Length: 300
Image (cartoon, rainbow, N blue to C red; front, side, top):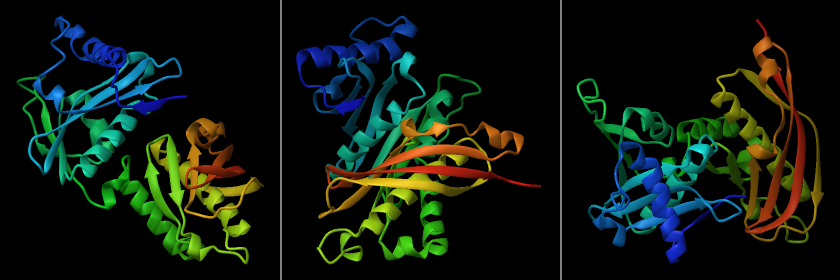
């Protein structure tokens, strides 16, 4: 299990800076210490650690002005790349920037990482001349809006939300909104007052619907990630209710909980996948939905 922390102890900071050096400075034969600068004393630092408290990814945020925050020193350990830890760092740093009143965030990026930042909603503000200087950095910017509150693929999530509203009217009636997507975790939320039962808690059918739609949404986004076409339908589903929902209803689906294979779609065959969604009453887990879905292959 991975978690994002703020490194504070001497041991945590030592590990934090060492990973920063190992990824960003050692390949260029730069000495230990070259990975730090004067903004480290006033910056916001975040680090992803594994169960052994070992650093997996790091990043820093500092302010250039009251309105402008800058993300620097993004680094993911090579053995952990491709698992979504960079997105987790970006998300944590952007939350800190919003909380401190920033209106936008800037990042400097080389060619090999610019695609990642674009997926996180950043636009190129100044394009570097990488033809004459391959090490030159592009200047990227994200202005904070309600739209790009979603950290990863915000344009896809906006389109998905629109699809729900237009094609699944009950989702709008229930007040179901996409809250966050990181590429590997998909979270939705609903409005309790629109789903209340005679006991003043969330209607069981609404909990089931929230779990179904959350799983469906994650699979839909994963099809886009894989550049595959298909229609996601629920084949069977069951839910275990543990406690009533009395506050803000949340549902979370994780890619790590998906079993099955999308590859059948490449041969024009239907794909079958099973996925779970955890339903929470604010922070308290109260139910678990399991859905068996079929992705219908596109037919010529």
